[in-house]
Image (cartoon, rainbow, N blue to C red; front, side, top):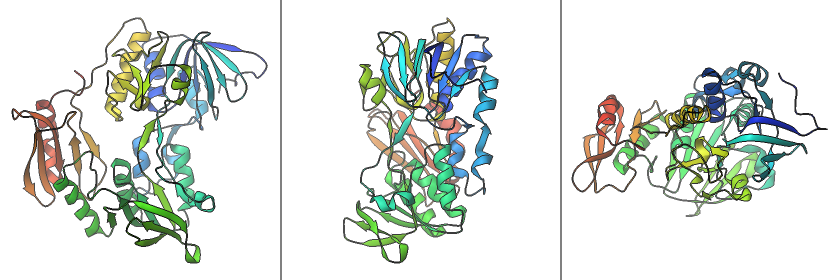
Length: 396
C-alpha cells in the first residue's frame, strides 16, 4: 500500500476523492481504465476495503462472514488503482479558495480537482439509552456489518428491525433466512411505502407473516429502554411493549452534506446540488453517488451511481459529458416475495392494479393514461424489462 500522508508536510494530489464506497472507487477505476495517469488520493473514513454494498443485506442467508464480503483490502485496492488511500481518516474542513482539505490527523492536503463521494448516513429519528447503544446497530458499510455480524455470532436471536423501507425489508428477509427471530416495526401500515402502492405492500407483508416474521406496523416507537432479564424493551405509541435481544435501525438515509454545506457549496436536504456534469457550485469540485442531487434528482441506487461515475470520468478526462439516468427499476432482495419497482417521479393520477395475492402488477399513470412508473411482485417481476422500455427515463 502507498505510504500514508506524512504528518510533517503538506501534500498535493491532482485529484482527491473523499469516500471509498462504490462511487469513489468506481470513479478512480474508470479514470485508470481510460488511461488517466494523474495522481489520485482517496480518503476513507473506514477500513477502505472494497465490497459490494448490496451484498450487505444478503450475508446472513448465505452465512457469509464479513471477510467474505470484502473483494479487496485497502492495500490491494491502492495498488490496483495506483493511488494513495488514506484510511480511518475524516475530512474536517474544506477550503475552496485555497483548494485544500484539512484531515482529522492534522494534515492538510491540496488538490486540483476534488470529488465528494461521501454517500449517505443513517437517520435516527429517536434516541437510544447509552447502556443499550452496543446492542442497537445500523448497517451502512462493511465495518458496520462486521460489528452487527459479531453481535449475532452466538446463535439465533430476537432481532427487532425498525423501518419497513428498502433496507429494513431486505434485512428482515435476510435475518429470517439466517435463522433469527425477526420483528419488523414501522409507523407505516404496509412495507415499502415509497416503492409500492398499498395492495402490493400488503402482499409483501403477508409473505413475511406466513414465513414467521412478526409485523408491528402502523405505530411509531415511543421508547426503547432496558427490559427484564437483559431484554431490550420496545414501547410503541399505543403503549404496546415488545422484547428483543438486538435492534437494527433501518430508518432511512440522509446525504452527508455537512462538509459541503460548511464550505459554502449549494446544498439542500436532497444532497449536494450538481449539474448534469456532476459539477457543484464551485468549478473544481464535483459530487457523486448518494450525496449528489443531479439536476434535482437524488437516486440512491446502483445504476445511477455507475452511470454518474462513468460520465464524471469522461468529464475529468477532458470530454465533458452529461449524465443520463434510464428507466432503471429497483430490484428488492426479498426472496420470500420477489419485488421490482420503478416509482414515478411525480404523483400519479392513479395506480392501476392487476392480479391478486402475491402475483400483482401496478401501473402508475398520469392524467392522460400514460405509464410513469410501475411495481411488480411474485412472478410478475418478469415484466420488468418490458415495462422499463415503456416508462420515461428518470433523467433523460
